Image 1 (spheres, rainbow, N blue to C red):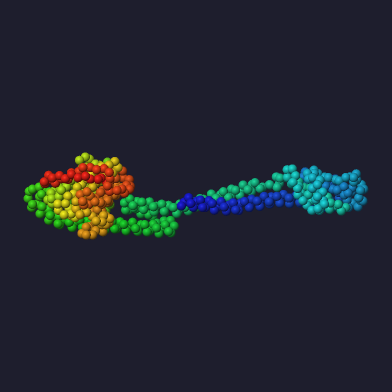
Image 2 (cartoon, rainbow, N blue to C red):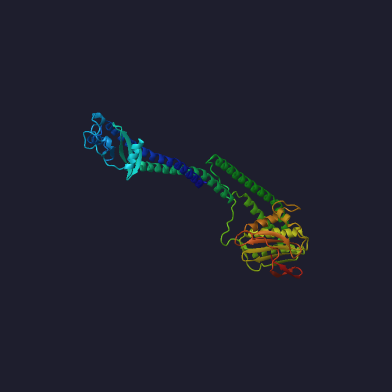
Length: 490
């Protein structure tokens, strides 16, 4: 906007300067020419009274010399009027008293041609003609004898252009000063308009980056001032809403302490045994998670984790850990389960807690929405640019995957809060990946989590089935039975 204002001001001022300076320069040149020829006419008029009185050469030479223009003036007297020294004023008859009666008398240097002089004498009015180095003014003067004499006044080119170049230089300097001044004023006005807009943009970026204290000074034009006031009000409202949400999350989480305490006491009374020990471990972990939620929710300055070099976790280790936790419940319900691809490290740019929460959400859905004895599997595939986590089951499947993903965005129905898929989706999208729901080879639902390793945008949608096949084994820990099956990778 700033440079646009400068360009507009430059163009407008330049057009105005040209529109006024060019005609004014031409007028100045014409005025100088008129001034030069007006001076020549005055010089010729100074000789006219003497010619009307006498045509004597000596007297006319003195008149021309007294006018101060003897070098640039010439007087052309016809032959018939050159015979008397005193002309009509002396009373002498024509042709007497002089040896000049036989030819015309010329005083001074002639520059005009004889044809131009004869033409002026015949027309009886003044005329100008071009000669070498300038112009001449030919002024006819009537003699007492009735003849016409011609006074020639030389006007050099320097007299015609005298002061024109200086005037043009002054006009150019004034025009340049006007252009520079207008550009400077436009630039200052542009700065006054652009700087508040830039501060508004910077404040929006800071607020988007999680800097909730970002505010914009109220300054600049009235429109930008109103925008700054609206932005600051919005930022205050965002801070208040986040604070309310944190308080609400903390209060809801704190309410879980009482049932957790009862659960912990009941778990302590279960006695010894693997199931009792696993129950007590799960209760302790649940208490830690609730405490973490309360502390995080109470934090007035939420921070965004920055993913630097080496950040993330080992997905294979997290998968083994969470499957070890859920396997106990699977054995109790008679479910067959399998883990594939978690036998070697797989680094992903996701926090350990986020991946564990996503797996718990999906496996919890399997146990919650499928009947006891339904088999399930977790597969981990490591590619060059992405890691794929597949959670599949042999249940009834999902008839409307789009609606299920919509519930994951906060509109839970059918007894579902919709938070599980939302946790998974946000974890995948934080890396540039995505989540898709399809049908598994087990006959039920398959949730595919695509985790980008390079943080680029999510890949274009492809067919759910690919061309690579692997042999997998489904096992049931209690009975030791195995099930071999063929499976297409996405």
